[in-house]
Length: 440
Image (cartoon, rainbow, N blue to C red; front, side, top):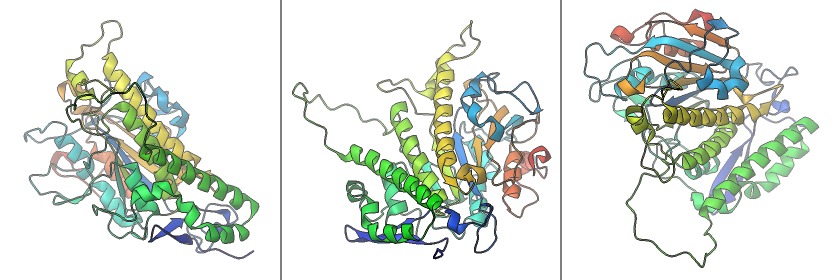
């Protein structure tokens, strides 16, 4: 059987533009155990991601009672139960503002991602950028930044003057991954036109190359390629639906022009985006297009469709239910976010490679800005990680570290992924203590 190189891509032309489609990690690329690359003997490369959502979690509803392994998720995190053996929860952590003015929802977010409180355009790289410089230098995209609510906002940065803006459109992300060879991940315009891409499958443009590859692989790889191409086509079909003109409805009349509202802030829209982004990220990671991503969840502005009542408003205006002991609407918003998070985890876990999945070599850091959003709490901040990064982190552990800086987790994941640092953070947020309980 002819060999294939790991970096083999399917190439073709679509709408006058060159396109390339990467291949997932097939058995033909791996050693006999399926846990290393056959060509070099190197272990499968790790993937790192962040999931950042504002407004914390309902206090007292997420902390497990058991410290250490074998914990059970509290009611707030029960949606994550399918991944509890790959989940670590860190409780008791704190943001230190060092007597500086608190810019609510921003200062703590910057500490979480950069380990410091930037002033103006000052500030160093966010931890994902440092990790990307270590593990993502040989990938097509050093990192991918995404926003569920359609905004360009992101806490990822190369420096205080060089932000990494989020992509808010799954359609645009699709064209970046499957479009012509890409150079600048932060460029405002991309070719080919995503509308054209969605109307004609990229797979149709590389048919001849697909046939050639299929002839050269075994039965297991053929099945894996079929799953992979089916996944891509399903995403294309979902995106194409958004571009189709709806069928006319006789009873429909044109209403007056409504006030403009930010795109994607309805939970229903954000859920659709999450599903599409998750599938695209899983394919991008499986094909070696990127090893670093950042998902931004704009909880500040998310709301039920047709309602002006946002998640942020609920944290401040909703009373604590006397019988339940917590804010019911806020709990429901948090539950929605946890379901969305599991969609991402599920997509990564469905991307099979060798005996495992992409999630097996992924480490995701879940961060937020506050503990109790009602009072902009900076103590007892929830932090989570999911995945081992290919065995670099022990999982299934609840770590309690009362009063320690949140940056301990950031330092730990950076060291686990090979960033050459002994400490991270500034002033009260500075630390040289990794969380040894989870270090493999």
